[in-house]
Length: 432
Image (cartoon, rainbow, N blue to C red; front, side, top):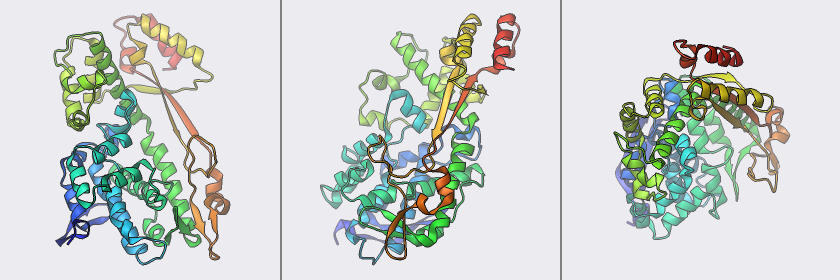
């Protein structure tokens, strides 16, 4: 039997708290799960610093990747199978793309990316087409197969239907992480009727569409996503932890560039700091490595990095205040001056953090980020954009919400053993 069609002698199952079971029958999928690059995802949390706010949020990118695979497997094996619009020969490509879509995430994911200007999707593609175990498994299917999988993840594949299953405004990725993150954080916001949505999904040439009868389930999904972003993903305490995390990494890079002598040298960061990072160097990075350095850097002579590391490791986080940069820029300038007088570097201890989300958008040609809208399949076969039929979705379509917070070390400002008058001025401006 050819490798691409090979099945396991006995189905393998993963017990899963969200989907009950994750089923694997394909030899290719089982072999991909066993690669070291995929196993690395066990050591990267799905929600970065959110575990410091919601103590149950310890789940990993490994959990999530299996979940996305399972949702896609159910869609194409249970819902799409036998429909003329679905090409069965795309099945393995779709399953592999779903399983591997997050393969390139680094430690603390988006925080790490922002500091070093990395792109996890770029690394995902590099792992798939590079000298890796994952590449060798995929290449056994066909020499061109790794490239096809990478193109789906890059959204450059000619098969737009497969891309939309994994990356669109209603895809398996979002359907898994909303439910999984809700489960592990203990909140109720991320729950929606996924079973109903799967039943009403239909394949079209370039995208997945939803039967009109399933519109209310999709409304529920979109509102769940909206609530999860503002109640969990953008939680101000988690954002405060991200601020400290990013400032530690910035400080480490700054010290390295200033030729500071580390008591615990950042060996794993050298190629990053020197812009010489290789794929193999990147794959050695996971959260256990980063946390090791944070533990060790608590003992550094540099007061900034040692303090920030103590704060992160021991969860002594910054406090925050609401902030409007358009109206309060003069206050921020004054605070910067006072922080310097108080002996605090505002670059690290007075930080404005912004969060922004667009819960749903319709297609606007020519915009920087063109979003393929969710289409409803009417009884007569016509397609209609979701917000044209749903008053609920229409109310939030195209409306971007942005929130700004100002983070600072309240414990230092309340300590009046030194610089008492300056600290009182700062507290007055912060309305403490």
